[in-house]
Image (cartoon, rainbow, N blue to C red; front, top):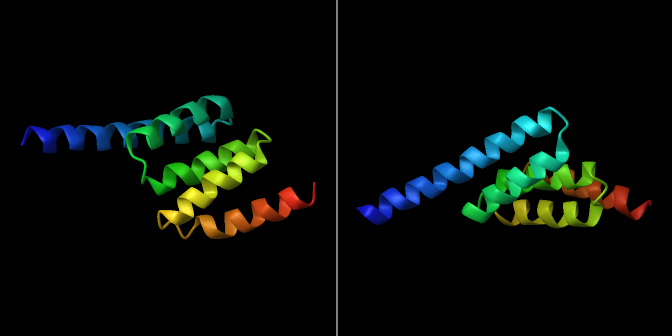
Length: 96
C-alpha cells in the first residue's frame, strides 16, 4: 500500500509541476515554465503533455532543436496533438 501511495504522490507532483509550468507559459515567463516542465517530466517520464509544453517553451526560447526533441518525446508517448506542432517546428527550423 505504501508503494501505491508513493506512486500516487509522485504522479501528483508531476501534475503539480506541469500546471505550474502552464501558468508561467500563459504569462510568457518561458524560463520559469521550462523549469517546471523539466520537473514534471523528471517525476513522470511518460507525461506526454508536459513534453509538448516543454517543446513549445523551448521554441519560444529559440532553442528549436531541443524543442523538436521534446515534441518527438511527446509524440512517442502518444500525444497526437504534438504531431502538427512537431511538423511546424521542423519546417521552421529548416528554414533558418
